[in-house]
Image (cartoon, rainbow, N blue to C red; front, top):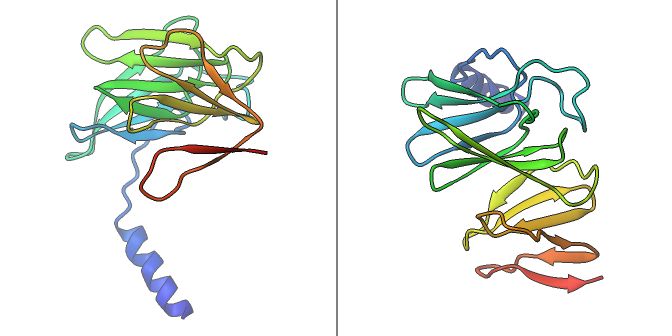
Length: 174
């Protein structure tokens, strides 16, 4: 059995290609055009970056493994950690500035940032559900917004969320 596992690992490792970056890559997401987007917070974001260099979101072409562009965050933004994509836009969490952001990529990129209403919430992971709602997590809370991100944010606490097979979300109070 151990020889089989070792052989499997060796086959996997042989197919791995390293792509060097200048930052400390965290989250990644694939878009519908075959590109890979990588969050480069410039630090180890657990939960806050103590020292950083300029952070960015990198776009890579998956077919030829080349860098397309690094989108450097403007002043007032900090350390993207995890990413999600919807309609060609890249959404990201910023635990250091307690915010959720959106990048509209292109030759003139547009950045937007929304503060999470809970102080020091440190948002981390995020995703879109099948209805287009943006969900993200913070310690002991689940947040949801319907883009475009207009207040208020829905904050769900003291709930146990379950996902029954072939259905939407349902909740059970605890």
